[in-house]
Length: 115
Length: 114
Image 1 (tube, chains in turn purple, cyan):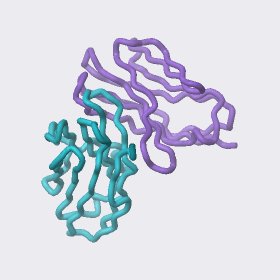
Image 2: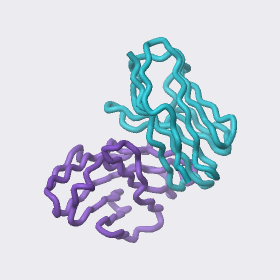
Image 3: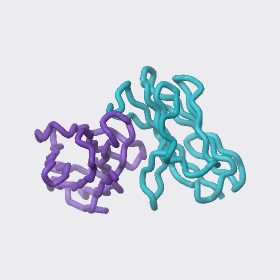
Image 4: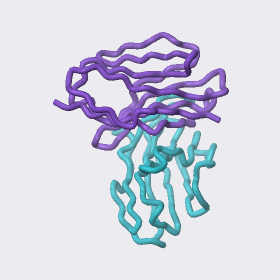
């Protein structure tokens, strides 16, 4: 069965520190998609990135970067030079199948960035 | 575009009452999803539709829950009768025509059942 594990429940850092959020997944599908969503204190979920199982290239978007490693079934998310506005709950998610739209979410990691 | 619209934003009701949550997806999106978020269980997919047709309702907890999508611009999630354990934030999300497209979430409805 598919499963997403975010072992870090809460992380607290001081502004400008780098922080990595871990995500480990389990699936028997050969084609699948991985996602990261952000849930700020206001409550809505905001899409950050999607990665398919055939593309292991790391991606960088501003201060955000993602490291996808199929060998370890991990899709980790790093925020460089964190800011207070990065404080949120971050969810990693796995698609069930290649085109079902059904997402399995991890339990989320609460990131607190202190000034 | 206005994004996914949900109403009401907050609902407080008493056990046994019927509750109806509403969602308007983003125009042109073919998929619509209903999620529930609680501290204990996290984010759970309840049901999703493709082109107004329910595809997978395996996440619907009980027969007390039902969802409909009468047209491409409107969906409802109904709980009848409601129970205190249904208290949660309910999110609606929509996405484009491929199942793996990013999902755009609404602001959620915070339901409290007393």
